[in-house]
Length: 308
Image 1 (cartoon, rainbow, N blue to C red):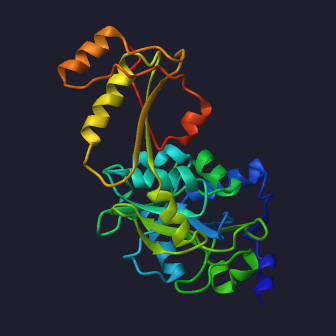
Image 2 (cartoon, rainbow, N blue to C red):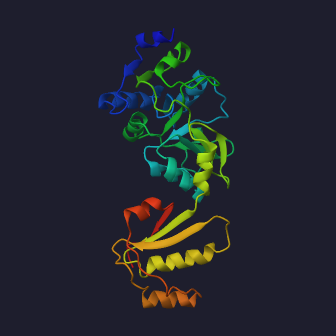
């Protein structure tokens, strides 16, 4: 009976919305010492180990009966941390991140040299996710190590949406089970390989292929930012427009704004002169103040250096 799980010493209840600090601390301590921890996520229950502990990684493969040519996924402590491990980030990937992270989407990137070797596939790719759940997010933030994760099931079996579904065979090999009730979604994350253009859906999970396709196909939005939006960012915008012209089929919005800009001012005379030398006319430019809405709508924001 799966209920026998609750008589085991390796299970403690945790508040899934406001995880108790001492319980997170216990999980982090075990993970640092090469142990395996099960925890709730937004999708299904997961298993985690220290990604840089090869013995723990090997043990996780063993208890899951999982082939070693299928690397585990890196859970991120912060949304922006993916840039530390991705060699290349296409704009289509950035759109998916902006829309679905934190959330039930795993993305495969070309791994860079900083990526933990244990999580890099033979094709040189690494899977990453930023979940929408306080328990794993607190573990990654407090841990100070990279968290390798996988669903808490035997290879090929149903992924559990509650701890009762773990079963004795797997549960007895887990050092700590954080019991946080039923997961919100109850279905695995969707997996998309963003090393390709267009991106390739490898597994349709809680996000549909239509949702994913609509997101990466939407008009791309690139924003250049400086202070007054009368010299540097208008020049960058104009150059980008010239470089982008005719290169891709996607619709593209390229614009600029200033952090302390007043609306309606022309580009500075020097900027206009410099652009004219490049054969680019920016006489129609008018300064635009940076707003929260502008930032939220941008897929990529390129900020000018502090010094003019």
